[in-house]
Image (cartoon, rainbow, N blue to C red; front, side, top):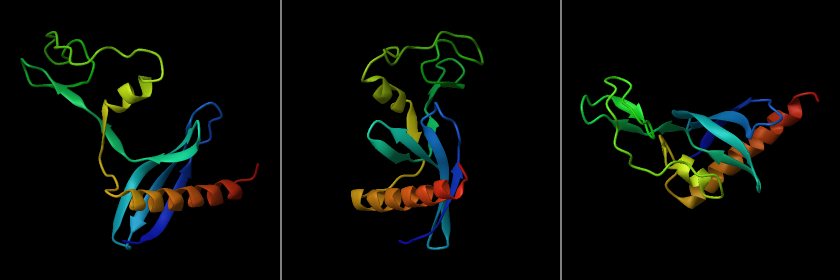
Amino acid sequence: MEITEVRIFPRESVDKKLRAYAAVTFDNSFVVRNIKVIQGNNGLFIAMPSRKIKQSCPKCNFKNESRSKFCNQCGVSLPIKEKPLTPGADMLSQIQAEHKDIAHPITQSFRDYLQKSILEAYEQEKNKIPA
């Protein structure tokens, strides 16, 4: 599978870690949008598009955000499945557990190829923008 196009959509915000969104086209046939370019402690990395995991209400089956205490539809108290967020090193993993990737690479080699292609396109786009 070949990456045939990478489009970068920069997000200019000094204090935020999100630097850009990317749309990647594969074999001129398939596109994945909303891949995030994020500034981490060890440099830039990509995060695949994801969605928040929902929790069903036991009474009415309405899909509520995870960690909700009450159902947004019927108001019944929801069972607590996870402990509340606690500040510290494991906070990121707690937040990540609330999201599920929509699309993601299966192999590490393809992930490396994808990340390298996106970060190269990001650097090129960043150099185009006048400072």
